[in-house]
Length: 372
Image (cartoon, rainbow, N blue to C red):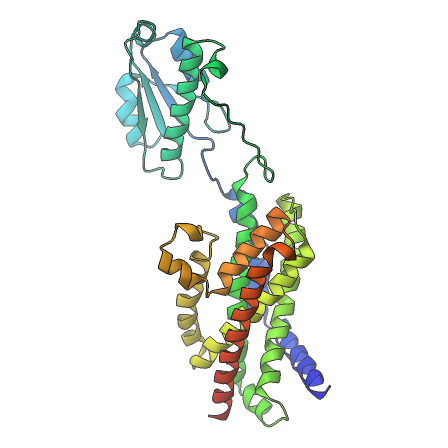
């Protein structure tokens, strides 16, 4: 009971210290509101509102059909462009795609001479250029087949594929990005909050005051982990309700309570990592330099930015030792696929084991720094 009382009082001290730290409070607000809403609302995955110009030298029915097939929201309304302005328009970046339909295109098509048209792409617009060229190719192929054999598309197809998206039927990329942003921000805050809190106490001499009290290293660590985890879990819940579900309109299919419980377990591991890094550093700037090469791989190689399956086999095995890899997998399974404990228990077990390992190493290192 005495240990629980000590942990509770130390936790209240941590919360009081955070309440008076206006910079960290501002960063918390930004990380769970603006930093989530802006990337998710402004992200464009795929082709959207791409600018197109058409050089129509044929002026035929099929050339008009091809021009009219490029429609919003993927493409802007196609603009007519003279042939001698193609290079100038592309050099100035006025259009991402310039399509040149040559003269006698329809005549050659009907005569079976396999005519060609030209698609000029401004490859500097990397986000849309290559995907847009594929879009235009498929749209034109569909229109040409329909023109050559009206109404016989189904008969010609050897198989008819029907795609149905069970979640996110409109394939909104921002929905997935919003959750990944929360996961990334939790990782950053879990390490930074605990590390800076420990270093701030050391720099201000507060840690020396704690040493003369009847407290153990375990009690100090649990208080720091518990208080910071409480703050981050609360911010995560508010962000999911207000920003993700409210402002962005993402219909989360899974259990919010289970996800918050998993978040608390993940914070147990990541905050212990933050304390371990803080014991290696002697100042806050040094801690920042140590945290960067740890946080960046955790964010980029956890599966949120790049699928784990696409990485080299050795790197996949290495990243299984990172708690962020399992947290990303758990977040996607719970929030998007409504998975329960019976489905995600392997990742839960791995996350708990990694957390215990990190906590044990951090506790041993923390005890050594207190006595040295």
